[in-house]
Image 1 (cartoon, rainbow, N blue to C red):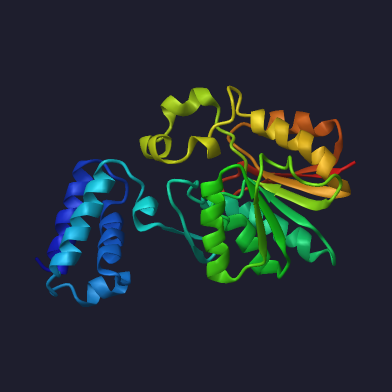
Image 2: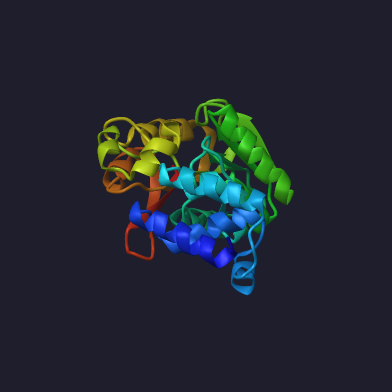
Length: 277
């Protein structure tokens, strides 16, 4: 079995099962099995696969056919130009979340001294990216010990100045100690589970996905806690879920001012920012 034949067969299997981007997926899985870059596959298409590579490739294909996301098979996902370790204990970072990082980086660079908190850090992709882009220290929390362990691995990989701790949202943070609170909180309404992609619903951690019946439960709790931990004049930045802007804006209106929205490339509201009154 040579590399080109293995790719053709893998692509056919994935395509018949309705897997998105079957050719790309087969290439990524074969690279992972061979521990090589994709360019190697094209330059060595007639090379024979080793027995070990063939065994691993077959196992990875089988896992993908069962619905396991490619990122959980390879244990990595690219985000903000860097490769992050991901496991089923953390949400897979999405490109849309890069808008939150961009907004945070811009706000941090405009200030000399700032204490930053990333709530619900998961893989640590946001915290590590912000720390590396700005050269500042970022505090990052998560309710999941397993998620914090993954974030710690990503922090150590890049030598980022990120202080990790386990707590429920910002409940363990000192009063009026934060200048900028950033978060990509859970925002999927529980009733939407049936309509989600199966690989998301069945594989990604529900703790990081779902937020009550309305999808606003975590936003509400987080904003209430932020009112205590963010200093007057400090800022909150949160990623927005589908159709969550109206509800989030209503929660913010009571004690926050200068509420602004950042839209993504498709025109959807993606990030909301507000100043503590």
